[in-house]
Structures are given as structure tokens and as C-alpha cells.
Image 1 (cartoon, rainbow, N blue to C red):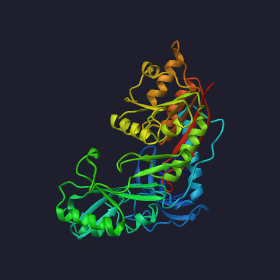
Image 2 (image 1 turned 180 degrees about the vertical axis):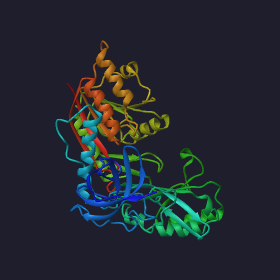
Image 3 (image 1 turned 120 degrees about the vertical axis):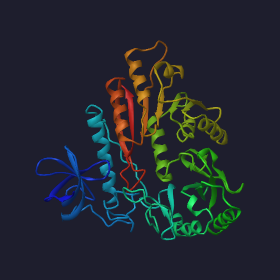
Image 4 (image 1 turned 45 degrees about the vertical axis):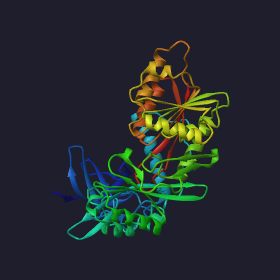
Length: 454
């Protein structure tokens, strides 16, 4: 049963971009759609002992930072797209709030850790930035229509989207033609997903679409895909099963890659590889990370969680030697190929290792490096930070820890957890930290922190 609260004053936003207030009893209330400083009424839908959650029903005092959303599919109404959560908040205020989220996590989860210097947030275009996306496909037999897009807010249903302004305009314009294409295919009810990946190298843009199909495609369906590719200038890839089964519909065509022009590097990739969704931000992020790490020509560097070599190869242009370590043999081989493609095989080497099960002996076995770059997934790099803490408590003869670490994070909570270990148990100072607005209009917070030996 839901009830309507009295007027509440919103104090802040949480990690899900919900307004946070307290009711007359002092209980925390999370409010979808509310912004800090606003006075609002709320329809409460969930009650727990320590908190309540509801949706905004009326605004008595509006925040000066509230703006009209740039997408017609954004909102709290039934059927609204759940892809973005912050379009009602002015773009620069979104960045400021993400910076505050980072600071709050470091303070509360890392033992009152406060960086010695706050880095200027990394930000860029707020629309048309998303060069990767996973679009759900649903054939609604009762209505005889196909939906292509993101899921509705808090729902397994696909939103009825006709455009998406966070996608590049030419990709947003494909949503309705894709609906028509799928609707005319023999296997329209066995095609659950289209994954988008855009490459952009030397001014040439390649738009790849990966079609997940649960049954073999008929010759007629393949012909329809080919005709669509010619008409709209896209490249079709097919995925009959897992990611390893992805292949081009037809061999040939331009290479899918992205560039890091500051370092003269081109990075080929497959459309299902992990690459950053925002190429502009990635260029700035890589450049800043390398400058903050500041590798010298005679130094050895280790890049933990190296992926395809997004940081490894730029680092190899600045130092004597860099070792990239990743958990997948397949990724390691792809990294080697990318190093060879860019003429860096003599400076960049790679190793495969489960980085969530590292101990002090494993870290020592990889040899000394003056500087480390760490770029883990959302789970963070706890094992690595714990190994450094253990080595600080029990040093190994002939091995010294890195003097500087740059930690790039996609989860401020796990960054804070690991930072607490590095600062309080491993002998490091947090000399700087800052937010990275990789996903404008979403509540997703990426960040970067720099640690130096105390």
C-alpha cells in the first residue's frame, strides 16, 4: 500500500540518482525524480525499517539546476526508458555530483581518506557520445510490432523508442528502420538483441551491428540484412551463441578500430570486445593517466587488467618496458596483436593471470616496476591492494613496491575499499583523485586516483 508524504526537503542524490530526504520521524526517504534543494511531495511505494522509497508527485520549490530532459522517452511515467537517470539535472551539475560521490566514498569507505588534491573532472560531449550499446529486441506478437531499444525503467519490457539522443545521430536514426527490418524477417521472434559498436579511425567511421540469433538465419533473412547494410552503411556481425561465436555476415569491409591520436596508436577490436563507450572521454582519460603516471624512458611499468592494451600501448611509447596482465588468454593474444600492429612488440609484453586470486608471491614474481597502472572491472582490485599491504608488512628482499600507482575505476565503492588498504596498510598517500564523466545523464561514476609511496 502506498501513501503520500508531507512536504520533504531533498538534501542530496544517491548513487542511483534518487533524491535523499528525511521525513518527520527522521527516516531516510529515497525519491525518484527529485533534486537536491527541492521541496517535494512523494508517493511512497516501499517501506523498510531504516528507509522508504517513493516517486515524486509534486514540486513546491524547484531546483535552479532542473532542466527539461533532452529525450522524449525519459521520465518516471510508465514505459519510460531506463537508460538514463539524470537528464532532468543540468549537465555540469551532474559532473559535480559525481565528484561528490567519489569524495564521499573515499571519506566513508576508506577511513576518512581525503585526497591531497582534487583533479579537474574529465568531461566532454553530453549527447551523441555513446559508441557502444546493447539494444534489446522484442517482437510483440499481440500488437504485431517490434521494439528495439533499452529496457523500460525498472522493467524487463523494452521501451517503445523512436530515437535516442545519447547515441550518435546516425545510429539513433536507425532505430525505426531496424524495427521494420526485424519485423519483416522470418526469425523475428528469435532475435533478442542487437549490440552496437562504432569504430572511428583516420576520419572513417564504421558502424557494426551484432545480431544475436537463437536459430540459424534463413537465406532470405541474410539477404534482408545485406540490403539493410547497403542502404544504411552498416556492417552486420552475427552471434549464434556466446561472444566467441561472433563473426562477420560477409568477409571484407573496413576494419573496426579506434584511435589514440595523442600517441599515434590505432586499436583494432571486435564489436563484442570491451572498449569504452565514449571515445572522446577515453582519449582524454588515457592521456591524463599517462601524464599522471609519468613513466620515464628508462623505467619498467606494469599495467594490471590491461584489456586490449588501451593503456599498455600508450605507456609503451613513453617508457623502457611495460608488462600488461589480463585474466583472459584470448585478450592477451589480442593485446599482442595490437602491439605488433603499432610497432611496439619490443616494448610491450603480456601475461594471462586471474587477477582476483593474486597473493604477495605472485606480485613479486612479476618483477619490480617503478610505476603501476590499475584499471579493474567493477569488482575492483582487492587482491592486488591486499598483496601490497602484505608486502609492506613483510617486505621481500630484492623487491620494492612501485613508487607511483594510477588507479582508474568504474566503481567508486571498490576504489574506496582498495584505496583504504593502500593508504592505511600499504604505505601510500592518495595525492590526487577526480571524477570521469564517461556516461553523461546516467548515475554511473568513473574516477581516477593517484597514489605515491609515503
